[in-house]
Image 1: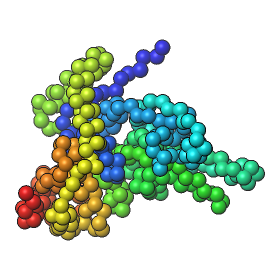
Image 2 (image 1 turned 90 degrees about the vertical axis):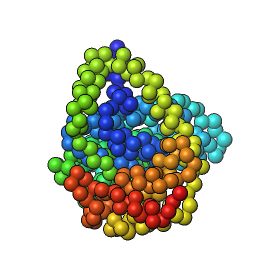
Image 3 (image 1 turned 180 degrees about the vertical axis):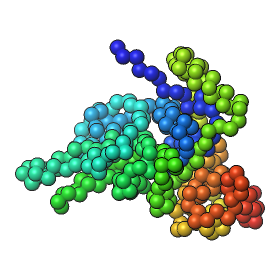
Amino acid sequence: MKNVKKVYPFTAIVGQENMKKALILNVINPLLGGVLIRGEKGTAKSTAVRALAELLPERTQVEGCVFGCDPQDKSNMCEKCRERMEKGENLSEIKGKMKVVDLPVSATEDRVVGTLDIEYAIKKGEKKFEPGILAQANRNILYVDEVNLLDDHIVDVLLDSAAMGVNTIEREGVSFSHPAKFLLVGTMNPEEGDLRPQLLDRFGMVVDVIGERDTEKRVQIIKRRLEYENDNEGFILSYDQEQQKLRDRISMAKEMLKEVTFDDKILQMAAKISIEMDVDGHRADISMIKTAITIAAFNGRDNVNSEDMVEAAKLTLPHRMRRKPFEEEGGINFSKVREIINEIAIP
């Protein structure tokens, strides 16, 4: 039997706190719109994405369904599973892990969205759909490495499906839709070119990562990596307790998410921050609020406070700014955000 190398533990990744937080928040709340991770090679971007899936608990899905439908969620089922349920059929259930579905840079539109057999539809009067990557991605993590090298049209399709939770294919007057609810994670090296601002804005969060500049942290990275390569099973076992602790925290946050409340001052703050930061449109305001709600849930609270808003602004605003009025040497200074919070006087 082939010896499969185990995935590096999420909690063993040294540093890169913003990247790890952005990934965790998107798992807790899939409506955040995904995350784009920008940075130089060798900064644990791919490692973090694959480790994230291992961190998540098993979920129930319909046995034999290509979309992995949730048998308890009729509103997000595929057409076939819904029809079977309406006929009173008992849908067989199995347990399955969330997985990482890779989308290669060379993927064509048909490979991504799937294809319809038009000839079959004309002859038989039935739709015959050949699933694509978006079908496999439903209820999973869709990972696009070097997303900046993808055709813009493909990126548009991905972002539309991520926002709508549905993939629709139309060919020669025949259309077919299926659920496509996934966590979209893109990674890229800015040296190889950037995404258009219109596409950047569609990602809920953008995180910039660089290699660690602290000597002690770099030593930790080396030590942990060598330990993992020498004995990956033993290394993974040593982080089992930390992994379970984070796993439980994510599960609790998911449950608490719908209980989190906020007042009108939070909305005023989001609007004022976006105006001061010279952000186009209203997507930033909405992303900031949804992210702050998720941060509160992750921190075990049922109300949004000012610190949640500061953290949310750091994750959702920089890539949406037309200009950077608070930029100083070493990055963006968000002291102005705190000033706005204090002006609105949130307790």
